[in-house]
Image (tube, rainbow, N blue to C red):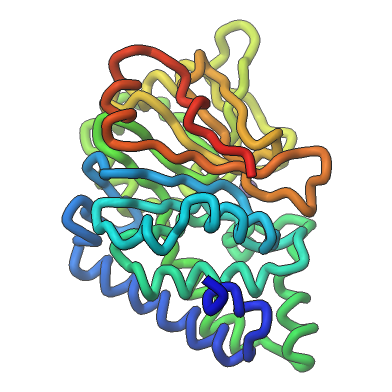
Length: 313
Ligand SMILES: [Mn+2]
């Protein structure tokens, strides 16, 4: 394991090479339309059959220590040997914590070694160029690290990597996974070909903003949505969750985006927020979800809470 965690003692060129290589893997997977025996990919939408084991990790926000604990917790080298085991990260790898570059380097090394097992979704923090916000410190992290202007590197290497990240994932019959949440859909005809809409969500600014920025809320007066205090995205109510779940045949939404004590449930326990960063959020906890195929099948039938599969690290 030490070889992996030696990313704390890295050469900057290693980081650049890993970003370039990972972008190429994403582009190759997109061209082939297949990511593994159990996963197909169309544009920025991935569809998996139920994996042998599933691990989902929420926002890391530059907290390398929390990421290391999670990887040790799942015994990642053994976990990733099985090509039917899937490890999904929900985005927001950078900003706030002290180790954004190191976190990205580690995640890219994982993707390079295990391209069919490891999947990196895009968070709103990886989308600053599309939807700017105030607490974006990754750019200055890079400038400090390199010690000179980085515009060329940023525009030619970092931004294409961010654009290559996946946006929306579905595990058939089980769950939807996004960084922020579910877009508010006014026209039910959307669901006739929702996979095609999601495949092209990178080109649809309105859809993209909601996937990256939305939060679930209990809204008064049965409202289906309201404006978000974040200034971007929306708050979506349980009707929106139910509409997506019934139209996709999924039981849960698994998402990150909101700091909490590791996890929280809302919308009649059908939406699970997973948060995996600790150091920048001393009042909160870091966690991950680990669930087996058998447990996925059982939970689909018995209505028990998915939170029993969340591990606090
Ligand atoms: Mn976020």
